[in-house]
Length: 373
Image 1 (cartoon, rainbow, N blue to C red):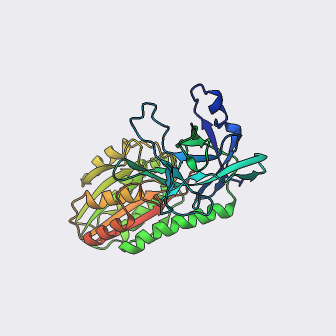
Image 2 (image 1 turned 135 degrees about the horizontal axis):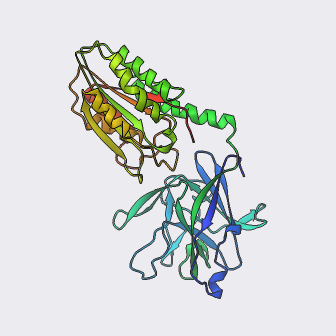
Image 3 (image 1 turned 60 degrees about the vertical axis):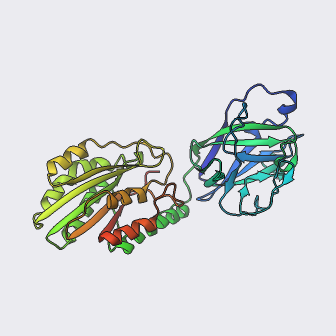
């Protein structure tokens, strides 16, 4: 297995099995995962006698047969599973752009020392159809998946099948090699720098929250004009725990010492986390009273952020679209240590951020903190 983050799978207890379904049962010793950094993982499943195909599904079968369960699909073709046939209602499905996570072609696996099915699981999946029920899945720690094992090949329901639900659990075996970390940080740098370039802002790095506050001061003093509207967009997930207190303690005193040259100065704040957290974004409207700003800062807490990417574009877009901008100079300063989602999880895209910022004359100044993940 590749060095770095190793994903373990914890199987959920299944009901009592019949003798015929026992051979379709998948247990922890029958499976291992081989990570591909930034892309997903190879899921290897031991083939047992009488087991001739496996399919990943978004849920287990409804025992009352009132609700369909759907096969998970990749967005793009891959050579491991992209050509695997699938059967439904007695007929082979046509090969189109629906890349099911299925395997009916076991090969020998040295780790399991047996024939095994292989499924490549990308980090972003989809399922269902517009005319019934559909959705998306982002693989992360705690993700719930189901391996459906079949007596017949091609996930043919005319034979026996069994659901084997499991949860992904993360354990750090050792740190990724330095070159891997450098590549990841360079990619994040490029993403944040793009936001600055596209909106006429500037990208900077900060050593910690204390340095981030100093960088905010430098940005403010570099702005020329009579009036300034500033929205501070800040990541409040748990990885920011070592940085947020510097912002709480030092931001307002710094602002007081840097705004004397402006006739008008207003500051708003957007806290952002991620989807399926306590909140996606929280907006604090423009304020001119810095004591009021301090009151809000004192009450912010950090929590959540189970995976690495966060709702960065959603936070910035909220800062753009939820405020009445009137000043000569309009800037957003985004502070965080994690990248946005590579594939949008909601309706907000980076293109929307850039377009709306241009429409309103807003410049974005991202400040990148060292990551804690």
